[in-house]
Every structure is written in structure tokens, then in C-alpha cells.
Length: 158
Image (tube, rainbow, N blue to C red; front, side, top):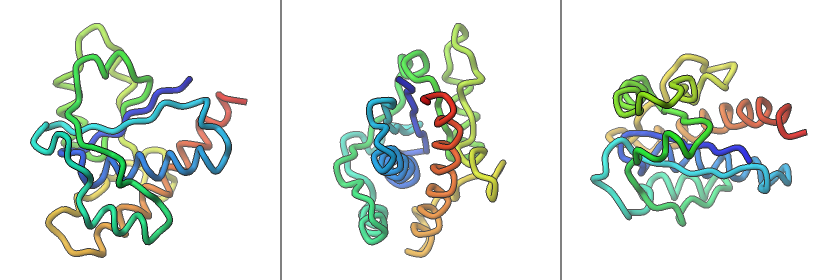
């Protein structure tokens, strides 16, 4: 089983969107038994809360249900429990590296968009303080990277 954790700042916009998109991609490909997927935030400020209503509305409009996801902060054990920890931006990556225990391979942490041809090396922009179109842009970026991530993993699960 491949264990993937998506991480953003508060786990209410970008990482739950990435989790929901990737979960649907693996369901559409009948590969649920090959993956354990979750998301978390660098901070625990929103712990237990559902994703931002703009994220859930946009996701639902585009065919994804993320309403069941609840925010949680990243935990020290996550670094050992997950095979891939995918950061939404460079700041998240910096914080993950600071939090990562010394006995864990830091190479398991990567930028999520590095799995996208179109957006490689770029951050997923935080739509929280922007307009509604920012949430759609984030979802489209997550779709692109999610398909790239599935393509990467499909070689490992066949």
C-alpha cells in the first residue's frame, strides 16, 4: 500500500482539495486498495473543521466531494507513517523539513506540483484571501498534478 499525505498551511483549502481530487482519480481507476490518502496542515488552528466552504462548493461543482474531510495538524508520526508527503508550496516544504525527525528520509517530502508537467516547481497558490476563481484554479492544478501522481504510481502498482 502506498501512503500519501498532502500538506498545506491550515488543511482547509489546498491539501483537502488535493486529497479529494487524488482520491477520485484512484477510485476512477479502481485502485483504492493500493493507497492510503490523507491531508494535514502545518498549523492546527482549524483542527476538526471541514474545508473552507469555497473549497467544498468549487469541488462539488467540479465533481468532487471533499465535505467529509476534517482539518488536522501534521503529527510527528506522519513522517514515518507516510511514504510520500506532498507540500503545496515552498513555505510548507520548509516547515516540513524543520519538523521532520532526523531518522526519516527527507526525500519523501516533495512539492505536489512536481508531478505536473505544466506546473512543475511551482507552488499551489493559497486561495484563502482571494476571490472564488482562485479555488477553481487550485482545483485545476490539483487535477493536473493528481493525474501525474497517479501515472507515477501506476508503474509501481501494476
